[in-house]
Every structure is written in C-alpha cells, then in structure tokens.
Length: 517
Ligand code: NG6
Ligand code: CA
Image (tube, rainbow, N blue to C red; front, top):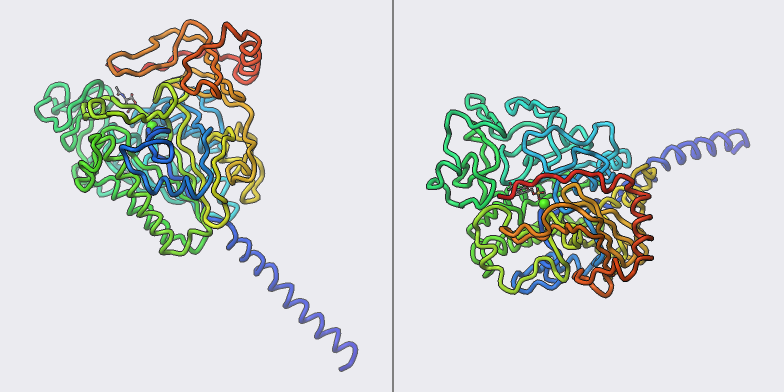
C-alpha cells in the first residue's frame, strides 16, 4: 500500500472510530445514571415503621429498604407540616424564606416560582425523564383556577414531564385527580366549581347534615360531603371525576407502576407521594382490620403493601440495581387530625413519634424528625447512620450524583452521607412548624420563646411553645424533657447566635393560624 493511500485509510478509520466513540460514551453514561425515586408519605411518624420500633403495625417493605440501605436516624423534613416540607424538598430553599409556604387551601396559587430551580429541573438536562404521582399541595394556577380548563402553572411548569396528582390533600376539595393539568374524567356538562368561603346552592355540609356523614368530623372538615366524608372547602359538580377514597392507594400505585414501565429505558426521576396516613384515613376493604389500631394503622399497612408492589415492579423490570430509592415522610405523626376515626381510642402502646416529643405542628423533635431511608441495591451497603441530614439536601446531593452544577440554595451536598460513605451530614438545621422556627446543631436543639398554647388540649398536640428559651441535649434526652437553657447559658448563647445568623428575623415571624376547633 502506498504511503498516501495508507494515510487516507488510516484517517478514514480514525474518523469513523472517533465519530462512533462519543455517541457510545454518551450511551454508556446515560446507562450509568441511576433512576431516582423518592417515596414520600404524608404524616408518617418516625416510630410508625418497624425498624424504628413499631410492633403493632407490620411494615416489612419499609423495613427492607431501611435494613438493606442507609437508615438515617437523624433525618429531617424542614417542617412539621406538608406544604413547607414539600417546597423545601423540591427547591432546596428554606420554606420560611417564602411567606406563602404554609398549609394551602385547594384553591391556592402555585408557590414555586416557575423560574426557580427544582429537583426535576436540575435532573432534566442530565438526561432524566421526570414524573410525580400522588399528593401535590404546592398550589396550582395563578390565583383564579378554572378547574374545567387546563390548570397551570403546576407541576409540569416547575420541571415534571409527567404529573398525576391530587391538588392539595385528601381532606380538601377538589376531590379529583389531575392528569398533566387536566381533571381526569371530567364531564364538560358537569363543570367543577370550588370555593373555600361560600357554599353552593345550600348543598349539604358536614356541619348542617351530620346524618349524611359516614365518617364524622371532629374539628374543621365540615364543608361539602363527598363519598360520605365531609371535607375542607365547598365543591360543586364534577361527579364523574370524583376520586374513590378507598381506591386511592391502588390508583396512585397503578400510575406509579405504569410510569416506571413506560420510562424504564431512559433514566427517570419519580416522586411518588402517597396520601397515607393523612386524614381522612380510608383503607381499601382489603386492609380494614389488618391492624388492631383502626384506620390509622390499617392505612400504614396499606402504604407498606403499595411500596412492596411498587418494588416488585422495579424487580420485574430489572431496575433494582440501577435505581436509587429514597423513602421519607413530609412531617411527623398526628393522631386526631380532625375526624373521629378511632385513632386516639385504639392507639394502644404504639408510639408514632418513637422516642421523640411532639408530632405534626410541633417544634419538638417528632414534628420534623422523620423516617428516612436510602436504598440502592448492590451499591449502598447496609448501614445505620446518625449523620444530620434534611430532605432539603436532596437537591444538591442528587446534583452531585448526576454531575449537575451545585445549585445556589440552602441545600447542602451530603451525598456521601446519603450513600452511607460518610457519617458527616450538615452541621446545623433550622426547623419549622406553622411559621415558627427552631434550631438543631450538633446534639443540641434550641426552641426560642413563642406565645401561644403549649398544648392544644382537645387534640393533645404539644406545639413546643413556651415563654422561655428551651435547650435540649438530644444525645442524653431524645424526649426533650430536661430544659438546659438556664443551667447551660453558654451553650444557649452559642445556639442563639448560630440560629440568628441564619434566621435573623426569627422571633418576628407571625404564627400561622391552624383552625383546630
Ligand atoms: C389542617 C387540617 C388538617 C390537615 C392539615 C394539613 C383542620 C382543622 N385541620 O388545617 O386536617 O389537613 O391542615 O396537613 O382543617 S398537611 O399534612 O397537608 O400539612
Ligand atoms: Ca403531611
């Protein structure tokens, strides 16, 4: 072969080779990107899970994730209620920076700015398809939603390619599913109207017509009756679109499974936000009586079953080794949250709050100290970790995992703690409960003074309010019984200074009104 011809062939081969290489590398990179699934429960307490001490409820599937992955014993939501926790999870921003990040009515506008960074928005350029199935509760539209048109902005406008959601909570209207902005099964001849102030045409309500209620309200929850359950807010029309409460778990499960099957050939991110054990607790008849605790126990068992079925789908599709699963809850537990559903009477020895004090709505630990497990078959070695981590850190940590830029938010990259490679999490965390904030640093928790009732007696909820500073060493006193503020003034001053450095207007916040009676 002549030298020039050889060079020609050599260059041709080189060109073909180099033309092939990048696409091959790209393919390989894509293949290596793990699917990311966040399974997020509603009001599940630290102690509601077997691995965290529950015996009256069996949670074998949650336990499997915890025992086979990293069981985080110092894992937090930012807040002791839903909306702010979900806001922080998705945006990496402390919810108290956004005055609208409070428990929202079903008619509230979207509280995430469509220009804001979110987990799905961060993942999309990294090649991910993004979906959410389940509870949303971050507002929809821009203030005046027409439920009979496409409802936007919403999850699709803040990064989700696919969104199959309920707008707010199971106890709030509208009681319909929304599929990428459209109310599912809506009959245009039976339009939906929603109002949180005024009833429509003297329709029956829980307040006026308790005889029509199959589940009785205790406080709040006395407006329009749907499926025998009185709700928060008034709703008219949309009969064909109404969800069936006892089928909700199966319905969301089927959507989550379908999403996985449809997107198994590309990296995907799925936020699967189950509605249990939030009120109204409506287990499918298959689960009624599987615990001795009444509906609250039964729906936790139902949620665990859903998790198991969902994992079976991942297994059947051969996805387990390439899927990172994060399991957590938006806030701590509540027993009586407004319906008479036997939760109080049949609680028995079960401790939904584990060893902690308080629960949902509380600045004490159990408000935000929630179950938190990270599982990745074959990649994560089983471990119990006491690294301090918050759901808000998932944005920066997942960005590190997929090689995206670090976002400029409150989210901290603690990926190694999530993967069990390090015991080092964040150093400090501001926690929030109904617009009041407190502080966690090292082994210490500090709650500044707040006016307001320390205990909401009719529902037996401890708010954490006190006229004095409270300081607890959680290492010796997980149950926050010994206030060390007076005996350890140095520590108190150190905590106050560190807290105020982050939250300079901490004591000026106004307390959110929760209608409890
Ligand atoms: C409260 C509701 C409570 C629950 C909560 C939101 C009343 C009296 N109480 O206002 O039942 O819906 O809001 O829960 O209406 S969360 O988990 O979504 O934050
Ligand atoms: Ca919740």
